[in-house]
Image (cartoon, rainbow, N blue to C red; front, side):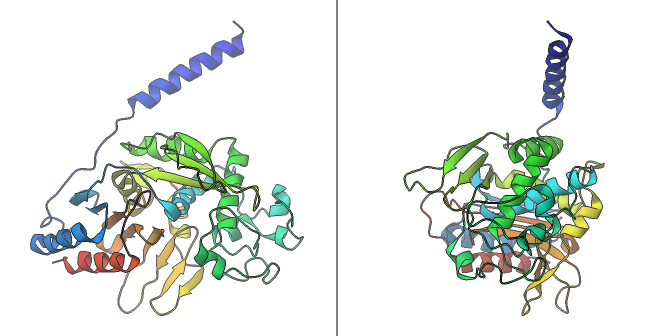
Length: 355
């Protein structure tokens, strides 16, 4: 056996041993009273959840669970929360010098199917895509009707001139990360995030889906690449995660990227990515950072919070001022009767339960 082959075998064994030694741990628990919440009020929340169409709700105070309702260990598609997961991977590889956020699409050799990108569109930087301000309005995979309704015409805006919640930006960011690292998004998330956090359910297994085949079924994996090749060469990347694992991710961000004393995501990136660069709702002071929505401080709230929703039903919310992480899930893979306004009521009931 050649030296290179021996080295690869030894490296594989060492990596396997290292992965096996990472403990899969469940978040510890505390009482509602210890978390500063009223147990009777949380009972009202529980009754509401039972008739809402929700699948799970997990509330965590200062890293400990004080409310665990529903199927919190069941994996569901997280829809657009995938973008917040991608943000952490960018932070890690930007710090490592693998990715330069000032690089343009032209620098990276990024183009798409006809009608291909214009010279102006190719001047968009990685940072512009992270902020959803690329000015590239090419067709993309996994675009909702709501996205299409607000989509500008090609060439309407220059890069960094206008915010548009843009799946082309998000999908292309996934491709750029994989191109620069040589690994899949799902493997990277497993290695860089899931393993260090001791996630219980996420294993990084992934498959592909033809999003243009109406009969195609979502694979029962942790990740799915959804291709719609008549629209774009770049697939959407979907994650399936449990509420518990998603809550761990929220606690990581609550702790400014640290887990058990180790810096997993650079603290500077956590701050930069959860800073608003576009005001998306001036009435309630909501903005968009780098793959995170941001609740901007105002007269009603003294501190910044940040969150991401998925399909109007799923939500990961991080409220540093309250030391609170909330994860709400719905079984959107099957039949459900959950309506988006119920999520707002659930949030109201949570904060009304604080002592």
